[in-house]
Structure formats: C-alpha cells, structure tokens
Amino acid sequence: MADIAPWIARQRDAMLAQRGHAWLLHGPSGLGQYALALELARAWLCDAPTAHGACGQCASCHGIAVRTHADLRVLMPEVQMRQLGWPLAEKAQDEIDEKKRKPSREIRVDAMRDAVEFAQRTSARGRGKVVLVFPAEQMNAVTANALLKTLEEPPGDVRFVLASEAAHQLLPTIRSRCLAHTLRWPAAPEALAWLARQGVAQEAAQVWLRAAGGRPDDALALARAGRDPQAWARLPQALARGEVAALADMTPAQAVAVLQQVCHDLLALRVGAEPRYFARADLPQLGALGALTRWAGQLRQEARGAEHPYNAPLMLEALVAQARETLHSRD
Image (cartoon, rainbow, N blue to C red):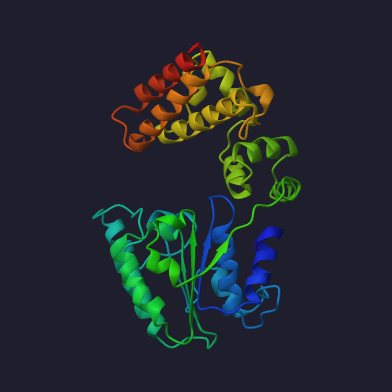
C-alpha cells in the first residue's frame, strides 16, 4: 500500500468514526482529496477493517490495489482514469481505441448511469458497495442530475464519496445531500518530511512546496515533472530580462498559471505582505503597484483562452514581453 500522508491518515480515522452514506471531500487542489477518498473506500470494503483504515492484506484490499474490485466503482474523466490506472468501461475503451472520440475531460453521463445501475445491484463480496467520484466538479448538469436521485434515496448497502477541488461548482442539491469534510492543510515540516519519504531532496522539496503554495500533492507533482528547482527560483528575474526560455518547457496554460504566481507575489510585496510561491530574495524589486494590478487582470483574460492558443510559441513570447514591460513600468 502507498505511503499515506499522516494528515490524510488522521482525517481518515476521524471520518471512519462517523456515520454517513455520502461524503463530500472538498478544498483546494493538492491537499489529497483523491487519496482520502480512496482510503475511505478501502476501509469500507475491507474484510478486516480497523479504526485506522483497511488492513492492506485481504482479498478486498488487493482487488482495489490492482483496480479490479467488483464492489468499487470509480468515476473520473477518462483522461484521469487512464493516468491513475483505472480501467475504462469496455464500450468507452473501444470507442477510444477505434479513434471514434478522444478520452473525455468530463465525467460522462453514460458512466454515471452505469454507476447508478451498479448501486442497485447486490454486493459481490458482502461488504457493501462504494462509488467514488473525483473530481466531482467535472460532472456536468446532466451527469449530476443522474446521480441526484440515488443520493436522495440510496440503496441500503452503497456509500458515496465525492472528492472535489471546486465544490462551489457542484449543484447545491448535490452538496446538500452529502456530509461535508474540508481537507486540512498540513504544517510545512510535516509536508516536507512526507516529500522526503517520496524521494524528493530537501532543498528541492522546500522550493516545490513553496511553488505549490503549501499543497503537498501539487509539490510532489512538480518534483516528479523533472523541472530544475533552481530554474524555478531564477524564473522571476529571467522574466524581468525578457527571457522567453524561462517558459520554454511549459504549455501556454501552465505559463499563464506561473505568471499569475509571480504577479501575486510581487503584488504581495508591494502591499507589505510575504510572497507565497517564491522566496523574497528571488523576486525582482520591480513593477509599480498600478502596473502589477493591470497585469493581474490581463493574465485573468489570458487564462480563458490559454488551453487553445492559436500559436503557442507566439503566445509565450507575448506573455514574456508583457511581463517584462510590466516589471519595468513606473506607473
């Protein structure tokens, strides 16, 4: 079984002591919504559960580990299903293999209808059934409504766990039918110790945890992406010099997100607050408050079309030019 972060284990244990057929785990990305949801599913289905979760040794635990448990249904966008090793339904896999369509970036209504039908069946192993939905905000209105009636009148032996990084986007009727749990932020020393156990060097862990705004799952993803932590630290100064190469390994969407972090930290400095994503020493002492405020608005506009740019290299050049102009502005 994977190394469960201690803050996830504490939340799991507290939730297992409570009753409820449907949980909504919510909070910003990178706090472990998926990990906590899967821990709950393991414990609920385990043949020999304890107050501290699943045993990790039984046939049920093995079935979840190899993604074949008959009483667990996982609903995700197909893109994430494939990334996390969950098998797609046979029909969906055939359609993708035959190039009839691309893997979905939403939770498809067909998958939800299959899950609702699954919830009506008898448990295969006699420990009940679990439906795990992540990220729940990727349900569109049709998909969410397909789930709603089952949440209102659930079969006796099924539990639902919805994990979300943007719970405000869920239908109010979905939220009202779930017990809500807000994911907790771990303290930096605990997060750094966990990153070290995942093989991230201490100095790099400090850089990436800061870059992720204190969110350990996001920090681990940054560390595993293969980027140079020193290059990250040098990025704000490189932008001030107009170096397009500073963003060369990023998609336009990633570049806009990083520029928003730089802008956030520079604005924080101008109003006397501490930066969040970069060390103070790594930030250029440039950019007037008015120019930075305008830049923040421009970046919000850019973010709306960054996933589908007309010309990615030209967009990166324009973004760096915009950053340099802002950082050297005096008004």
